[in-house]
Length: 136
Image (tube, rainbow, N blue to C red):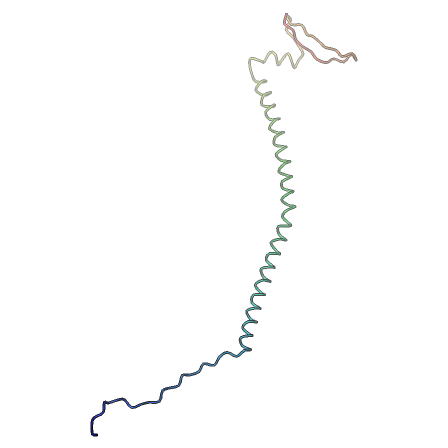
């Protein structure tokens, strides 16, 4: 009986786990309310931004159509001016062409070479219509 016993550390009482108190029901409901409020605020802000964007687009549509009309007018005027510039350029080139100097002089002064005869077309009303030059 005097046998030696294996040495064991003295037994200590097992510490009890500390119980974490669960959140109470009203705290959970409060967190859900906060999340709902936050989500509602986000949706409201997004709706406000969307409304502002739609309003801006609605205001831009008439401006855009007005600009398109002005652009069409400008293009039409440019086309007319290009035609006028082309005709003036042709006339300028013709006026400064030395080969056509005599015909231009005759045309502007209504004078003809002695060997040419003018032909005048007259309407029934007696109005002069056109003067042509014929070579003999």
